[in-house]
Image (cartoon, rainbow, N blue to C red; front, side, top):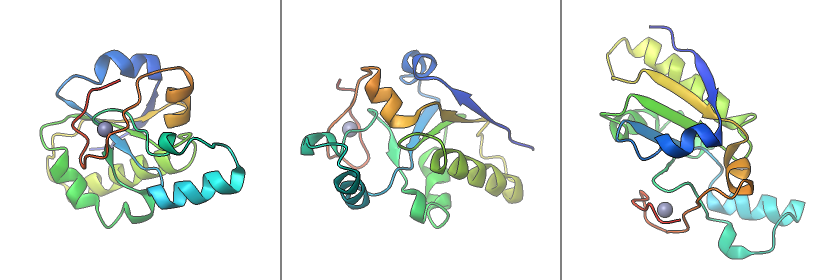
Length: 146
Ligand SMILES: [Zn+2]
């Protein structure tokens, strides 16, 4: 089964993200790398914003993505649509999405995953358009809070 990766916009994702068959996979760096990067780029000064995420999203840092790929497949059991994103969805989001697609092809096992999507403009775009961001520290995030 050949998987193609397509993009989904934030406004398309917003009404879909509560559906039980959709999983959102956040592949941004771990919180510590984010802190370093943000410090370095001096982009932000509000510490509480650092760990914001899309409510209900699963976090699989891109650095360890390949090692954790079987955990991910377990975690998304019953979901047929996976939406990947990183901060901007330019490099890591699509890379991890493709890596999963290759993995699924080699697995030759029906995981039920039918669609692999990448969120256009990533988390930064999502947040910048004022869409709901969750600040919980639950792993995994169970929240739907705005
Ligand atoms: Zn949360």
